[in-house]
Amino acid sequence: MGDVLNGLNAVLATIPSPDRGVWYLGPLPIRAYALCIIAGIIVAIWWGERRWVARGGIKGEVTDIAVWAVPFGLVGGRLYHVITDNQKYFGPGKDPLAALEIWNGGLGIWGAIALGAVGAWIGCRRKGIPLPAMADALAPGIVVAQAIGRLGNYFNQELYGGDTTLPWGLEIYRRVTPEGREDALAGVAIDHTPIQIVHPTFLYELLWNLGVALLIVWADKKFRLGHGRAFAVYVAGYTAGRFWIELMRTDEATLIFGQRVNVFVSAVVFIGAVGYFLIARSRGEREDVAALRGTDLTGEPAAEAPEEPKAEEPADTDDVKEDADDKKNSPESVKPE
Image 1 (tube, rainbow, N blue to C red):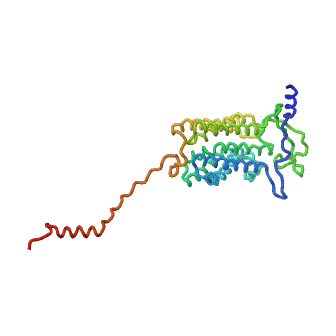
Image 2 (image 1 turned 90 degrees about the vertical axis):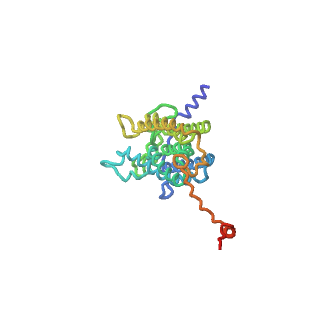
Image 3 (image 1 turned 60 degrees about the vertical axis):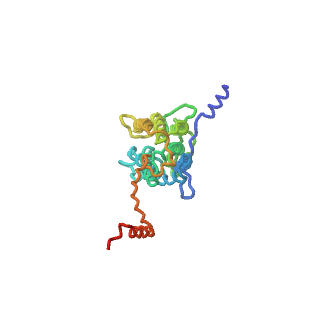
């Protein structure tokens, strides 16, 4: 048994990093980070579509909503990153235009979810679908998409923690451009001797996110969560993990009272998600999605328009003529001469 453990430790001595995060097809750069983001979006839409149809929705509606949610989410994610890490782009010696270079990494999940929800709300409104019902269908797919996106950080050699001697430590290599300039994103590792062995915090978050997805699926099936409660489980589960993982990260970040800003954001959002989950219990069991057509955005039945009074149908002309003849020949109609 000891030999097996020693052999396992030898295999897991360290985790090597990729030697690069960008490949070229002629002049066209193929970036691993972008491919991971795209793959995550595809998985989220595919799984969300299946869950929506299983709950009584119409096939294709999730894709229609994604047309609004995805671009809003990408913009929101980038805005949050640029705002909270503005020192990377603004100030002496910085290039403000680099804030637009989303392909080099840098998407804040808080901004992506917040502005993505605005896009989803617009799409749901156009379809007459309550947003909470759609959010419940999308919840596990979103967190799996985040897990896939974390693989992009692996290729970029970013978002890791401090030094470690644990058997799953991540090797960090020095990457250089063809001109000899050191560049962790665009460079290539020629020498695979690690310059540092660190906690792979991106991997911790990836595994945590997959666990949250399983939690959502289990809780949703067991308790028939509705009215946005499955989405609240996602938010609470994700932020609980992000809180302790954020404390381990050593990359540059904006600090508040000596702590990374996302530590505070995680705590606040977690409290909000738990509060919503408890409050939404009063709304009862899961919505019948098939019966949600014509409901307002809160899931309540839309007010019915008052019935217009029906116009009286004209009497048959033959009946009117017969009535007139009867009246003419009646005794009351005969006048004395």
